[in-house]
Image (cartoon, rainbow, N blue to C red):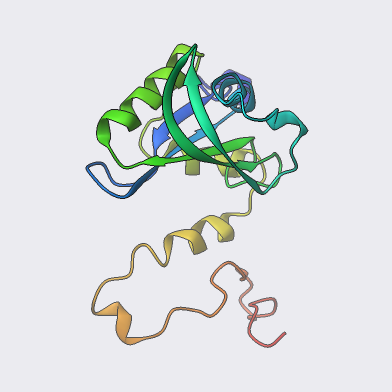
Length: 170
C-alpha cells in the first residue's frame, strides 16, 4: 500500500529545530537511504556498523570540504519515531551551516520533508498512535496548561476506556 502513495519511499530531510540563529540545529533524515546518505558525508565511522540509539562525533564532509563538526544520532528501524531508519545531525546553529548540510543531503538523494511528514509516516509503519500523541503533549503546553503537571511518563498510555495500561501504577 505504501508504494502506491506518492513519496512514501523517499528519504526525507528537514530542520527539526526552529529556524534562525541558535546554539545548535538538528537536521533529521528518515527513509531507506538515510544511513547511506549520512554515511557518505560522515567519514569518521561506518554508521552501518554502529548499533541503534547511539551518538557519534566527527566531521561532516562533502567531498573534501568540511561542512561542520557534528554529533550524529542513529535510530535504526523499526525502533524509531517513523519506524524507518532515522538519522539526526546535531550541528552548529548557523542557518548557513544548516542549509549547507540540508543541500548536501539533497544532493545525495533526499528531498525536503513536507510539514508533518515525519509524523505521517509513523502509523503506516506500525508506530502506535498513542506514542505520537504523547510526543506532542509537552510541545503543545501553554502557560495556562502548566498549572497542571505533565504526566510523569507521557510516552506510556492506552486508549482503553477502563484506564488499564495507562501507566499509572500498573
